[in-house]
Image 1 (tube, rainbow, N blue to C red):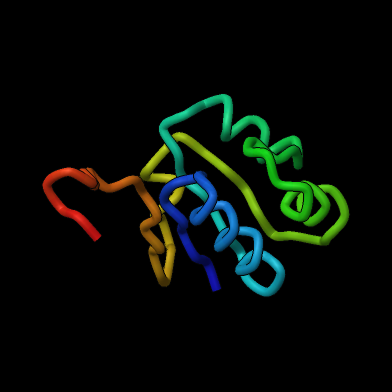
Image 2 (image 1 turned 90 degrees about the horizontal axis):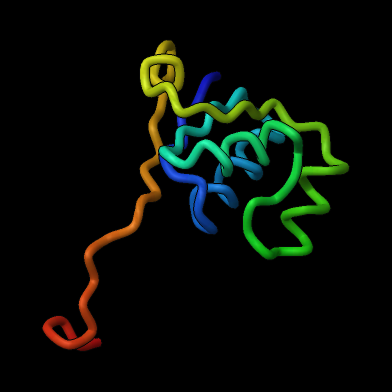
Length: 92
């Protein structure tokens, strides 16, 4: 099954890596450097476990900046993008 994951930050990348162990995952991000790093199996964020998974686990994972490629044939889309959270106007 193909799954698209939108956003290669900590949450999106974590989900993409976990899902790619059992499914075909195409991760979409606007940051070309993050996309290139993931395609080289390098972690674009500081996380030792994530780097280990990318480097050593068999993953069906591809990253792209092309939304049409990411969404084409995807059965599910996981959206993990930043929100406009403001701690001053929306206190926890």
